[in-house]
Length: 522
Ligand code: NAD
Image 1: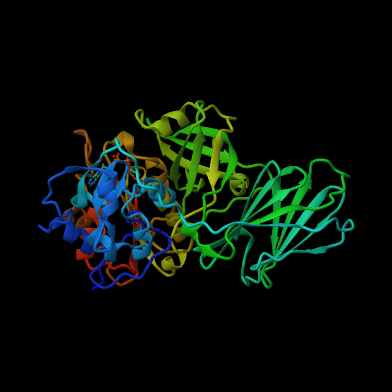
Image 2 (image 1 turned 90 degrees about the horizontal axis):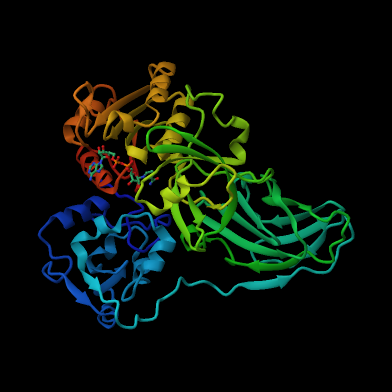
């Protein structure tokens, strides 16, 4: 039996760019190793203070330390377990890898993953060694040639990967990219416009690679872009609206080839689009549904099971970034008068967000009024392959707001006439998100959808299941008669990281494998 891996559980590498791990090097094997008596820190679990100089000396694969947020970890034994690959992990070794870690996958709970590797605290009172930066290739800037005749197309320099043309009339400018990516569809093209800066990202290879470039336009355009793609040739047309109509542009602008070819998504920089908070609805005592809307003509698609980063600019000039998974809005009993309509879906994203009073991001978000435009949304990121769900019934195991990535998956499966069993863990009844809506869904799909609620802090009146994730709860809910083990089940897991680790351990012993489980790490 294969053991389970969770693809985002890595220290500094790329969660989306999975490397094939050797047998015996799965997440489950790592958990077993951390639960053994092995001295992974190499210091007999005695914590010490480490100077940056000492950290810098542990800089090779056989003796590898790295620091994240002031704590130093010995990751020597973790190399072969690192889903992003050994080379990726090596980039953080011997240095303060906090920036590197945050750029790649800030949301991973490294403290839990690496707790047995903790060597001690990084002393902050001396000079830090130079921080290795993400290796970014030098950007190539090219200037588009001088003006085409109105309406006529003219060749512009090739970026090496795509060739480009542009044309204009009195009201619009069209940029044309010949990507040669057959089968490309418009959802795989993300754009953002910030003044005269026009950023374009094209995703390929199941969205796991992307091509980024920017055009520094000579004139300002409206903040919207209409994308048209030819499926057969991969030709992409991007229609921009001139602000100053009738102004003839003498050139398009400067092209900055950011990625120089399709690169793994992990190595791509974060690019953000500005959005407006158009709606905030209370879902329960501390969870709200936030709707963010982009300008008309800026459609935005996030693949199922993928997430975005939300960036919030604060009054003091600083910014906070957190990952969130957008959700669908059409659960059956959605109070229709209050709901954003389906037509908004292409230019709006909806997020279920729990407000933590001590959480700097969510408490700042909570203070924003509708109409506020200080939020930016990154281009989508993730590693979930929707194709894994083909012909599968889904077992969704969620805790708290961990329900968010599983909602869209559940709806898609039900619409495709397959079964979904949701086991939903919460603290109390009042914490359950969308309890009525899930009940409506059960009524709508009586043979296809079943939800089990499990409370860890129930009151006396609660008649349902109690406790945290355990073998007996899984036996009652998914491993019993409702979900026959006929090879058709695919399990999706999301919630706090310890919850995920425990669930994976239990699924592993129940015979689930890497091919039949995906964990959305918290
Ligand atoms: P919570 O603290 O209210 O806990 C909900 C339930 O989780 C509890 O009732 C319990 O059953 C279980 N649980 C909590 N801690 C546990 C532990 N240590 N071991 C076993 N079970 C445990 O949950 P919350 O505040 O809503 O947090 C949800 C988590 O889900 C967050 O950590 C968040 O980062 C994560 N999340 C991840 C994604 C993603 O896409 N990766 C999306 C949403 C939420």
